[in-house]
Image (cartoon, rainbow, N blue to C red; front, top):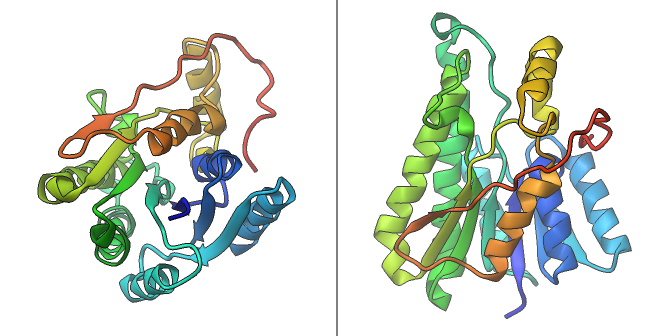
Amino acid sequence: MAKALIVTGGGSGIGRALAMRAAAAGWHAHLGYNTGADRAREVAAAIAAAGGGASPIHLPLGDPDRLRDAVARLADGEHPPTALALCAAPAPDVLAFGKQSPDQLRAQFEAQVVGNHVLLAEIWRRCFRGRGGGTVVAVLSAAAGTRTASHMAGYVAAKAGFEGLLRAAVAELGRAGLRVAVIRPGHVETPMLSAFPALALEQARAASPAGRFLTPEEVAAPLAAALEDPPEPQMLVELPLPVPDDRRDDHSRKTA
């Protein structure tokens, strides 16, 4: 079977970088988007111009019924998915703990936990299970790690829930062939940074070991490698982050 990959958030940031890299390696990239249809179409056109295959697909993580319908179409289509990359997440609401609203927390959990559960469960049922398994790569966040970020309660809690969801999937489906690898970056030069004050970002860049944040392409590289050489099933594998070896004053590589 030909290699085909669903990438959530495939129109920008890490998802875009991963889709471009995977397409160059012979994967057909299904570019999942919620509101970024134009961006997804632009990425698909760029991949096609480079000789690869890609197609935009509406994957609203906050709408389970539409997710199920989209997966059904992909499963019955010309390029049924053989792998899944979970890269999409709502931008954090940068607010004090007591000012995070219930609606803001719900929006994070509906996308990162409920939506990803529906998507992965449907992909498993329709695409992976019958062929003896499949590979999932996912983007977690250092914000929900041992040095938990402040003023991002909804985002942090949802990322922690997302990780728990993946661990539960491996515990139940690993013996049947589900393979999961994750990466846990800190700040990455993506459009999501627009949620943060500019001064705070410049201070954080200056404090970074290389004087800059990671690029989407740098984070995508180990994810793409895991697609080509999947981890063993029955365990969640955490991929190492690249170590920047230069200091860059020019941040022109930000993803639009």
